[in-house]
Image 1 (cartoon, rainbow, N blue to C red):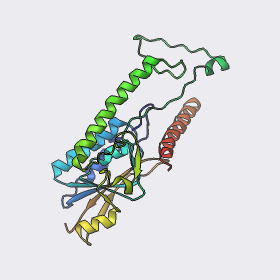
Image 2: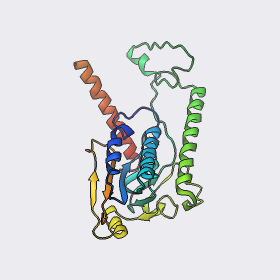
Image 3: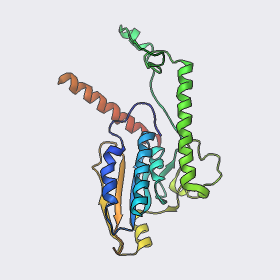
Image 4: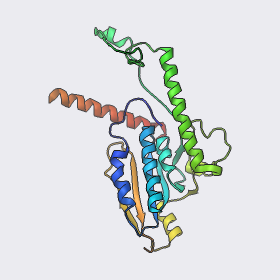
Length: 260
């Protein structure tokens, strides 16, 4: 689960709510299959997506089966927890139950290029972790405290949803990650397989999958829903381009963490 700078085009409830609602709107579908392919992102948005899926599953009385693609790690795995069952590809990357905040420090850069940094605040903590100022011990301690609280929330979700299916492996909540095949005995997933084969085996050969999916962007994450119908200005332009490049680099670094 990544903290730090916002991922402006990342997976969030605002851009998935419509898909979620539509997937659950098929009355004759006994199950909703969700394809997750995400290396993480905002812990808040991941939990909001998880909560919306669970709320609709209970309201519509639908079974939810989550299928993982390349990666369902960190915030991606948090979303996967919405499934009553999780089915992983043998080579999927699963886990990374932890919290990370990454940034850069440039305390000496401004001096070298002859720029003076001026920051005025009302409130002594309004400018903590400023990348252009030397790192302060108390600021790092405050950040780590927040991370521990978010990590505990994540752990509680995993234990609540996976229950006694989890093994006692001491690495489970350290931020470590595994392949789909290796995560099966750990209790992080329930089966190894693919969506079409699994759904036909579970609901019969006549099962049809109706895709509800958004377009996929550069280095973007994907959350796809299937209803199983089984037998039923120049400166502004430059700034926007810079923001886009930073966003793409952030997303690329998340995927790169898992070798993807």
